[in-house]
Picture 1 (tube, rainbow, N blue to C red):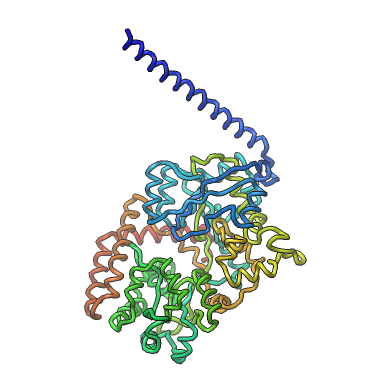
Picture 2 (picture 1 turned 135 degrees about the vertical axis):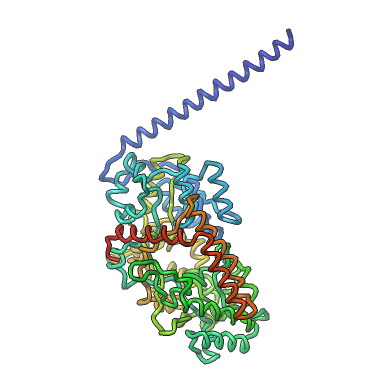
Amino acid sequence: MKKRGKKFSILLAAMLMIFSTACSSGGDSKEAAKKEEAAQAAVDPSQPAWKNDTSPITFDWYINFAWYTGTDWGKDLTSQYVTKKTGASINFIVPAGNEAEKMNTMIASGKLPDFVTIAWSDDAVKKMIEGKLVLPLNELADKYDPFFVSNVADPAKLSWYTQEDGNVYGYPNASSSPADFEKYGENYVSNQVFVVRKDMYEAIGKPDMSTPEGFLAGLQAAKEKFPDVNGQPMIPIGLHEFTDNGNYSLEGYLQNFLAIPQQKDGKLYDRQTDPEYVRWLKTFRQANENGLLAKDIFIDKRAQMEEKIAQGRYFAMMYQRSDFTNPQNALFANDPNSVYMAVEGPSNAASDEPTLSGPGISGWTLTLISKDVKDKARAIAFLEYLTSEEGQRDLYMGEEGVTYEMEGDKPVFKPEVLNMLNTDRAAFDTKYGASHKYWMMMDTNVTDQWAPAPVEPFKQMMDWTRGKTVSASEFDQINPTGNSKEGIANTKLGQLWGKTLPKLLLASSEAEFDQLWNDYQEKRKSTGLAEVQAYQQTEYEKNIEKLGGTQ
């Protein structure tokens, strides 16, 4: 009897626990339902929904970039102001290592943080949408915040990101439609630059590095005259980091500098097989044979590169100027002549102007809202605030009277704030946190109207790209992704290139390069190149239609 009584007690306790949990869960569900009803009842289509509820809430926000360090929301004056105003705080989550591994692990778990910000071209975007892990922004807006669609979001961007099911799951940052390009285009600058260290470049006679011969001669002269920098080996040429899929510098960047077209007579052009491109890949191979490609460039990640830029160890780089901010400040403070400056880099045989990538309608990243978001109404309302002109001003300029004052109808940074922005970006981010520290929803078309005039050592690099910057929106989002036949083939093609590119550069002779190149082209064909190109052509033509058929 004692044993039976003991079993009964355990069973009773378990039942009570289940009953208690069910009641609690039911209570939570009722509370959530009440909250949802209240949020819907408060909706006024003519007013921003974020003002309806400014009680404290903390969102978990995943940033799929391991290099992002601005995760200290609430410590700087700008984020404190935004939280005070909206009630929303952010707990940023950043992968410690490989972004793809972290993203895939989260997708496999079926649960995501409240917000996810990721490159629009990342294959994980399609996986999240197909796996129903993210919510349609248009449906959230219809229910809780119609003001987002009617007054804040750009119709062209919503249309661009509308999926086959009629829904929009992500909103871009740094996005510019063709209409934006017509309106603001003359002010647009590119991030793509070929730079040299000013003092070294001048010391070797400012050589023309636009031809293969001049390029190799310039690197050689710099290495001979400056074999080391403060006791460490000088690195003749720096590039983006090598990844499983290749290297930006030796793909789109180089092709844009060579003004290689992306289409000819309405048909996509295989830029990778262009003779000018092959000629310059061979030039980089020759650079390696001449001892001008340091081993560092094959293994360094962004953090190591920024450290070496700050040390002034590169002579030249084909890189993105936005990553020079902190290192340039350090160099400028130490010696204004040791900074990096943009010059004419690799060019085609006709010396055509580069066609550098400007802002496109796809933007840079997409931000999506998880199906597991803790408060749907507050999430879409917060997204609406961040995307609005008011939110853009708050995050870019900070709080009036604290970080800026009004001069007429224009907000202008206080002198001490502007001085720190121009001389010590890291300290500026820590103290003030404005000027795109939180770039997740930045709309540069809006914030450019408040941007202070560029100063050296950044102005020269920026100005160099003016007039060379083009719109290429029609070529965005044409690559197949996911588990379709074409998507799998495209993934394999990327990996094939990632393995081949370093081998081409490290080839011991031009004959070996040619053999590797021919083998690679054959493997491309057998990996499904024709199917991928057919898919890309179809998507390109769809894009032309979406953009009004005028491209």
